[in-house]
Length: 333
Image (cartoon, rainbow, N blue to C red; front, top):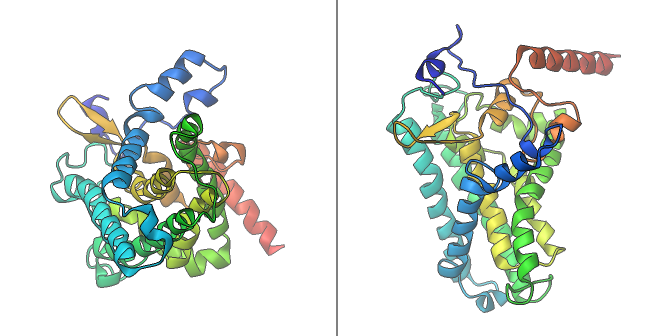
């Protein structure tokens, strides 16, 4: 993208990247070559993000997780190890995004959707500071809930209460399930996200997350504890589907780490003058901006199928407003 393109902003200081469009596997007419390139190529399904998260999960299991046999009994030491490890990882991963983009401001506002920075001295947020507010909810609620789900699931595996596999016994299923987890995660997220936009739950729970109309990396897990319980509950699929502990760790870490990328506020992270990595953030940024669209993500196009997709165009905004007004009239009738 040319430098001039990233400098053009509207009167509000907003920058619009190219309009969103379906990923290659969902485009018509179907192009097998384009679909395969997206699956296996750079900036696609596998690389860089899913492979990176999978590698972190495997390393976590091999070097940063107590022996499964020790988890047959709930003991403070191994639970504390998992909590401390998760806390350290969240600061490492989310902190890296925040440091690069918002502390160092290494690329200024290039590829940033708005020229506004994160809020300070704003009474909407705890401590009147958006970043401190977001860190508080991440540390005080997200990491404990994430850890609780991990502790319960690994302990159930250790005791044989839920179906568990090894790589040696089911190598093909092991790989297939690793590939399916990101897809399942997006379906689960769409469903619970629609649920918490139900007005009673929105007012009591989800409004906390939507205080971040201009999100940053720490905004991703800045949620009400009830929302965290729902958000991380997708890992319970492994109580039914035969899985390896690596699948559990990968699933939970994907839920924990991907929101930093998805709330970065930038379309692209510049690594060098000539090389950068797309965040895939614009889809969800539009949800924070408009509220009534893009409840899921583009990996599974549920928003397109259910009529809530916003591609960033004025026409999509008009359709969204018409849908919202029609619902308001129906509620008032």
